[in-house]
Length: 301
Image (cartoon, rainbow, N blue to C red; front, side):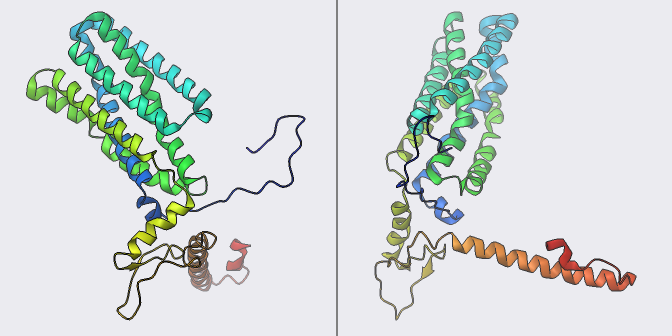
């Protein structure tokens, strides 16, 4: 919130933080965006599928009563894991946390597949439960930190659409593979491998810090392959034959001018809507011949 502890005066020479607003095309061109989609799309595919089949997986090992108890214990562990994340998330590298969570999930699935003893299944189920709440929570935290609050709604809305589309296939994946092999062991091994892929993706996205300079570099790289950088316009334009391929100037890649374009588009859309509403209001007013009606501009004051 930007508040200081009691008794400490605010320094007047502090500079306001730079607010960068990303367009959807700019965000999708970054490694951070793609790795979040891959890591947590796969992670939630595995998680939703496992939670849907947790009871039938546990019954052959623990029985009906034992299965109900271990599912309850995994739910409590999920709550504890989410509370721990909420307590320490501000002090940790969230990409590293996501990588560790996905690795723990992979190890838990591997242990349940290879060690079908009672104590091992209970232990690994609780360990997997600790990761469940965190896999759901980590993706919006990562997007918020890396792309900022100004662009969070648009960027994470697109990320969540991909993640939810992917995780919808989780229960079907578990069921189909179980019917093919007659056991949950193959699908648990496969999902453990998928979680390793997800952990690698989460780790790769955090190796390079996302900064406004790297935002400009996304477009400057394209200028070397026959496209002119146009970060200020939010799109890539082809270079004409009579133009020279040059590095983007500071005016073209200015961060301060980038957020102006979405605002202009919104203003233009608002004006078009206002004009259409005024025309519709005039038609209805003439149709019913009510001169005492409110003017159309009243609704926009």
